[in-house]
Amino acid sequence: MKTMFACAASAAFAAVALIGAPAALAAPEDDFLTVITNGGITWPPDKTAQVVDTGHAVCQDWTNGATFEQEVADLTSVTAWSDYQAGYFIGAATGAFCPEFEWKVS
Image 1 (tube, rainbow, N blue to C red):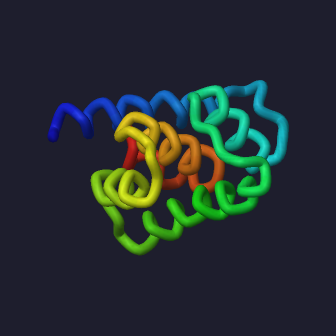
Image 2: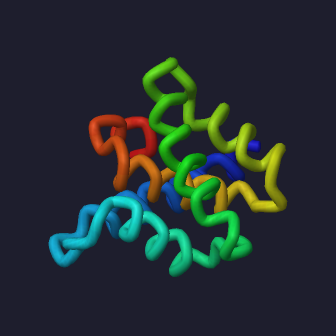
């Protein structure tokens, strides 16, 4: 189990780094969607707003005291994502919407 979370944490750290790249001049939502798409996460076009809302929910969970492991478990329980994909999504959301919590994924 620790190996899966380590892999997810590595993915999260990588996604945070991509969001923080100096060339990122788009709106945070656009950056977030680009990063998760480039990370292999897909969704139906009509669900884009829900994907962004879920990204913002990661930040709310951080505010409420969630751990990285809880976030990964929450996402994998409601999606078909691997731990790696969930970690990548969490890292991208954190980097885009609440970088003050980057310490939770690095």
